[in-house]
Image (tube, rainbow, N blue to C red):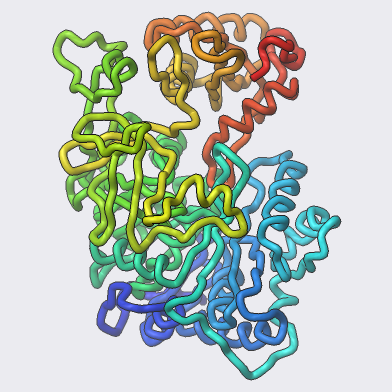
Length: 583
């Protein structure tokens, strides 16, 4: 019978006081803790103590040293599996730079996924790509026009063995983390040993304040920074046991995540807002749960939406969940992972503002008693900056702004990446010579905490107003929640006020009468809540394009729409962009 690794370390807790990942693993290997991999139904499949992870990583590293030169890139299809973890750390011991690569995020998206891998291979110049057997055919097809060898995990473990290691030092590289590509093609973000260990230190010492009896539960993908750093590297660097389920298993059976927390007395977990939302939708009161052990229910990876989180807290309060466990945070792969954390025990710090004032002046003024309900919007504070790091909210001329003024979020500190791999143009656009990163995100100060309001590239400027596409999308989904799926808003057409605002809404029906009812209801809701003219188009399920981390890629949906590849269900024909409407 397989038993999971225990919560108790058997050695003193050390919160990321290491200069390299291999230093951290060497100490973790002296503890009893490790990684546990569970099935969709919650059965333990594999237990991987840190001691075994270290030994198997070193064995694989001795095979990789003769295979590739120092600092060569190795693509790793990032399955939630012991094999991925072993090969990732094998690269650390072998002085090779692993690049975790995504899996397909939707069914039927094979061609899009293959193009994504091809773009990553073009920029990464991999010596090889290692993959699971189940993915070998897809990855090999994608690499048909490349010289990059594709090998299964098992083949990598059977390479001829040498007798040398060449582990990375404190001043060397660590990995390449590909951005999710929500508004552009994926870029390879350089992670160094210093940036990664600095961020792990900030996470474990100051953000989460890891304790001796902490245990983590995770369903996040390992190719995303929140999964790789937050659910694998930071736990290892603090010798914490982590329990995993596969992301696809989570989407099918999200309550398994909660059952793991309950059964293993996990104290920490993290998810984008939609993960908590999915649990509420799938909950049937058919399991015994005890969520009282959960001291941190982190939220990150996308904008924090208060309504679904409040619903989660209400639904699971009777099972021991405490709303004060919610910990909103902010970060991005360019800062390794985390930049800000809410104070422990604060829960959701909500700020309801007058959106009419905000859209016209950029000032986040609190809503008053006379502010109409349709003109209110509630944001959630995402906490304070990590020690040894700096954050500024800047206007579009680069001047720092004070409290409640909307601007671009800029960060500086030891966790910030040196730039994008072999992409000097993108590096110069985002990273300044004095170390500041322009995140591309918009936000404002609420006292000493940061509030994130959206992406600058997604912002729609219309008649002097700043229109956030997510406001349109959420309003549409709320108007017909049982018959509609994802929504996407963007502007097309001329410059200035001549643009047209499009809103695409996925529908689960093709019945003309139902579609007409949905169109009427959603259009009325948009007029009432947002007050801007929007051209609504109802589209089939699967029309949207998601990033590798599960975010909506508005830029790619817009491209798909303008190419005529999205069907209008009420016309049953693809939209065709006329010459004067293209942008």
